[in-house]
Length: 320
Image: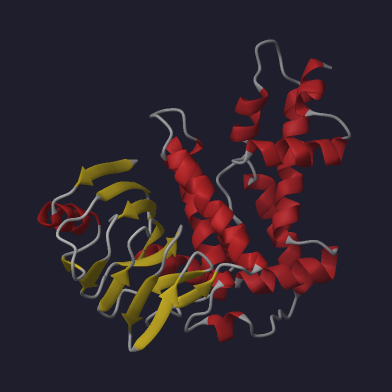
């Protein structure tokens, strides 16, 4: 994991350090402001990252096109006025501002406006959108510049962003994201949820009715693939990609044939596998180790799901 921490009151130093994390830009203190009080912590793994950034003063920021990445900027307090791609938005804790790679931006951050910023690599976004669509992306992916953070979908995504930030701040060899496959799976989930929670140029295509000529056959193939690979860093997007269908089509077929979702089915397979492993485990076995070996990342949620499915905690199964 890459990590950068910077604290400075010098405007030019702030501009240079923020530019290394993002891209070259103009940084201008607002009228009456001579310096800044920059506090920045940037952490990245794979194609995603979290930047906690606070200039401490009212500033104007003018970057050119980002070119290779997207940013979702969420003020913790205060506000930001942004113009991007010919549109304007006032960003607050309830409305994030979203920058796509293709256009320059002009931002006015108020004093006392610390931001949590989600970074996503452009190639990672294209890959995840292709999984959701079931075909390659054939044009620019432009996200709307204003994202409401008050919807249920946005709040769920924001919880994932905060979880990512917490894990990226852990010491070396103590984070769930130290394992590349686990990190890649979490990257796919966060980007996929963003593409489903927030409007963009492909949203209408994602919302088109799904269909498949042989849903039963597709589900059987998906179940076989999950049975063979559930203990790997497998996502529903991976299953759909392997079967050459969109995630939406796969979800629709599972609902029609099994009255469940691919995500729930995959989780159930993993829970069953953990249950078998714990019952057969020898002395010294760790519940955490077994859970991670079978693809579970959020251990608190795993324990709750396990108790619901089997009527006891994982540690009780292990002791039995």
